[in-house]
Amino acid sequence: MSVVVTPLASLADVVKKTVFTAPVHDIHTHLYEPAFGDLLLWGIDDLLTYHYLVAEFFRFSRISYESFWKLDKVTQADLIWNELFVKRSPLSEACRGVITTLQKLGLDPNEENLASIRSWFASQKPAHHVEIFLKLDGLVSVFMNNSPFDPAERS
Image (cartoon, rainbow, N blue to C red):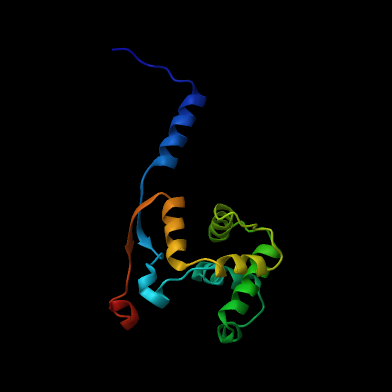
């Protein structure tokens, strides 16, 4: 029996290539088909008002829960962007996900405000947007986790 010795650098390259080319099955997706209507959350405002980022926002903000939830989604997203991305370094996993998403889409995550990012998303069609993410992330299948207790999701 012979043993093949691989230099550490080569091994790292093999592992990296294997990980980055492996097919991905998302078993807990929030990426819905456009046919699902309002259940499809996409765009920078939906990305920023994801519940992990909202919870993180409240760690730093002085706004009350009641006041925050009375605001429209665009204003909520602006507050979260300013608090978590402009005022401080976005270090949490949830913040890093937003930065990675913007970078993969070719958008600048260093923007002070969201105008140009919103403009880019407004120029996209939801079906095309979903296709972009399937390809960018190497997704070969997704499984939606609908709640049977929510009438909008049950159907």
